[in-house]
Length: 371
Image (cartoon, rainbow, N blue to C red; front, side):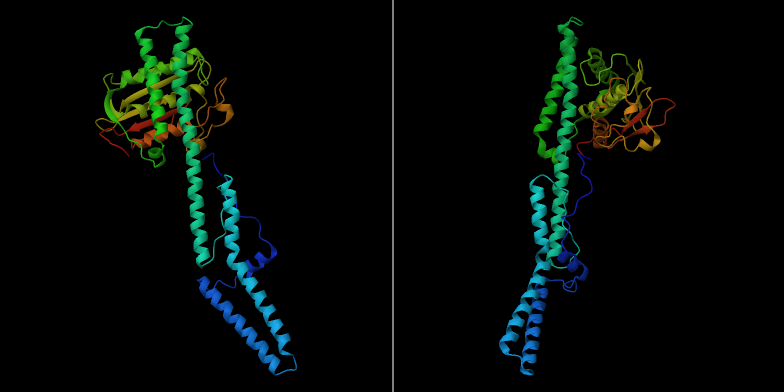
């Protein structure tokens, strides 16, 4: 993850007194601070009584015994108080670190009294805050990654028109309009942070024809790569669509599925060799309205040991597996694809392939309101 935080760091190394206290742990038998304080009072009274008894049966003056009694009581009180308040000092230090944005710090736990319960609750709170901070950073990274695609496609369409490569015919303008509409939808998702933070994202599933839907996505990808303006654009990679039967239909959220296919195609293009071929294959799944999608490329493929990690956030893979003039992207494309597939209750994974990489997506189909 993220912007990932490393192993949580404990608080600063304790001093000699704290280490001695940790080794002795004299308050472990007590499960309450009140019991520990009661034991402190009883101990002080016992020591004072013992010293008075010694003074009565010896030639020692009472005032000397009183001074020693006060000193002993103060030392014991200081020793016990240090042990009781050590978690509070540690929490203060960790809280200051959290105020500066470091949510990896934790408070040492293990005590059985109220301070131990407070330390455990504090650590749970710190873990929740760290998760929220990580989620916020990932959300910003996801949205930024998703905004690049429609912006690059829209820029490609406009540049082609300005440069005279294509005319401003209705079809070209419709492509630009689709990119603009998708950009608007992404901005609406950004404004709806509360639902995204809670993990509640609605699915607007509908029935649609697969061939024209996928053809539109590949056309957008082809225009973005053909203009050379998009991130990691590749003019030499050929995109191919294979749908059978031609009248195949599916039931899914078209916008979420667009995220899946666009990111898989973008990833396949980046890892393709010069003049390579990327194929998008669609077949009927096991259910009546289910869909099985595959995106195949002719690149170096994904090692078996890495197949479970490629869908993790910010995993860009080895540099040697990237195509020419590609920096590997942000490492978010496949993670976003898995997120969208999970919303549908489907599955995504790397399938066996004699050449290159083959990523298979299965969607169950059928009406689904939201997950």
